[in-house]
Amino acid sequence: MKALARLPQIDAAAVDERKFVTALARGLDVLRCFGADDGLLGNREIADRTGLPKATISRLVYTLTELGYLRYDADVGKYALDAGVLALGYAFLGGADILTLARPHMRALAREMQSAVSLGCREGLEMVYLETIRSEAALTLGLTAGSRLSMLTSSMGRTCLAVMSPGERSATLAALRKAHPDNWEQLSAGVERAVETFQRDGCCYSFREWHEGVNAVAVPVRDTRQQRWLAISCSGPASSIPEEKFRLEIGPRLKAMAARLSGHR
Image 1 (cartoon, rainbow, N blue to C red):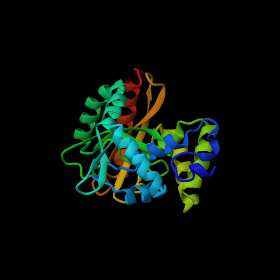
Image 2 (cartoon, rainbow, N blue to C red):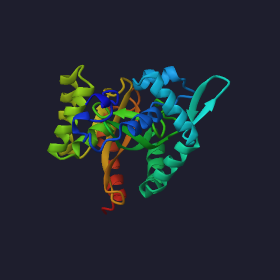
Image 3 (cartoon, one colour):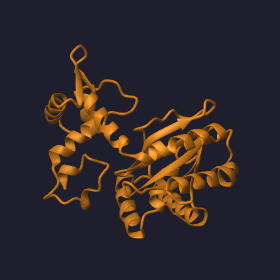
Image 4 (cartoon, helix red, strand yellow):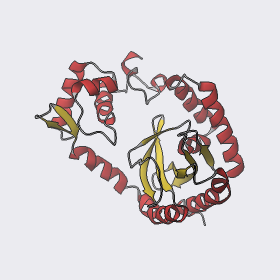
């Protein structure tokens, strides 16, 4: 399916070509290429990030600008995300009541453990933060809502894979293998260990695997309103929060929090 080759976050083999609107997918891919730390991007940068031809980029950014999703800065000849994207984001977050319920619990745990506590969900073959709260003392990487994480090496991603049915997990791993062919044996072994750990402990860990300086643990949270699985994680510097603290103290605290948020007493 050649038209989808430039869209790395979907499984092209699983898409029904008769229903798939390639032009829409390309427009959304342009919006997705703006990262949390990006300001303005030019046509060349957008083309490099999406793999789309410059002529296609020109038409897409013009359309997105006219619709209010991009803003054009004539002085530098580049584009930035505009209020239309923000409105969509607020509509999504506004419908997620679990965020309102989770924030005070996340804030308390982050403060007590001197760490960062985050809530995220799956998007394609990645995890995306919906919210993250840090203690003042937490020396973390500064990720914010909208930041993306690996499904293979992050505690959140591993938790998402762990709660899948065997069939869904197998299909997702097959798509991830195509997207990440390098070091696949090592990556898949990490996921296999995480699934075994989840079956035993009810949580997944990432000790210096997603980032060499970060330890983390995550647990699943059932969003009953939207009928989906989310993941809530706690992370901190590996130099100051050892693995044992995540196993013996933070993990159990996260599981209790997730049970409350999922409606189980």
